[in-house]
Length: 134
Length: 137
Image 1 (cartoon, rainbow over the protein chains, first blue to last red):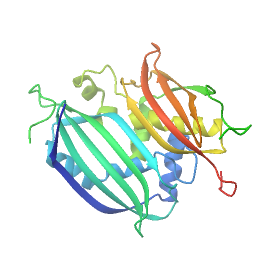
Image 2: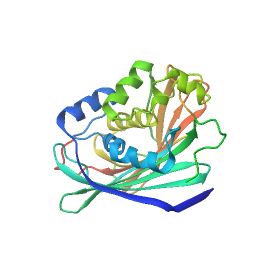
Image 3: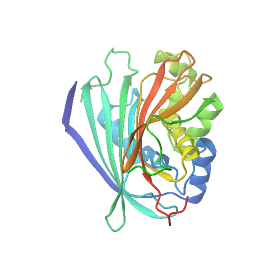
């Protein structure tokens, strides 16, 4: 496995919020409980800015397969409250992976949650590689 | 810590079986924002070497939360880590289970999800801390 941390980019901070309607819809599909379901913040990793950065890093002819995920809470999140999301995105070449590390903090700066998402990259370009080289 | 009412080493949480169909994957994509087409497009899944669209890893991971809450509402989930070892395809039945592997000031659960062939598809660990008396459940 080779890691290319030189490719790491930082994103954010973005303002994020677990709104009532989004929380209720998420609960309905997952059976999750709590004011904000434990895995709800994964929604924020689907932000268009994050997606655009991944496309910039990897090109467009790939799909991600989820390899691992961690949520590590300092304190539970509250509904209808603004938080700051900051991310670091990096890639590994062999095998090809995209790694997202994210921190969710209060507007005042206190850390609430760390997330890590590891995605295996499946190349769809037909060139036999997992993902295009940078 | 070893209170009379604390979880016991080896104690199991109630297992549950779930099956996610294509409509479930579409609904989860809508509420999670994860519209990765491999979960929704059968032809694309086939191009990736799968017989059917795979269930979102996060939908599988999310299934542990209500199972843990139903087991012990007096303990709060603080950390959850999961590795997705094999794809679970739409329409496959999955069994979720877990047991206590450490008890201290926190409780550590080893969580597993098996497919119909009894292969482990997700292995996870959950760290729980005791809910304070004034915290809402």
